[in-house]
Image (cartoon, rainbow, N blue to C red):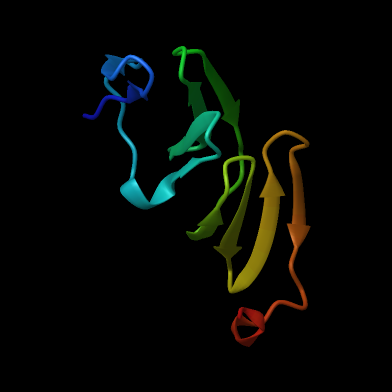
Length: 102
């Protein structure tokens, strides 16, 4: 298990802000205000004060391709989808080709 610490630059102190958690290292994202991670079928968030939020999603995916906190792109049955955790909307990405990424 791992724990999350907050580095307080002003006071030069490291402060523990979470209980032990488990997550896959490649499924972590931070936008400087929140740290996000995927735990099974939940997206977890924690801020520098230790406040947590949790969003559940109930769909099958084979592989998560990209994760940006509130949105992720995943693959299921050879098709790619985008999912927004706040609106709970899943969108099929029909015109996406790997060659489009620059």
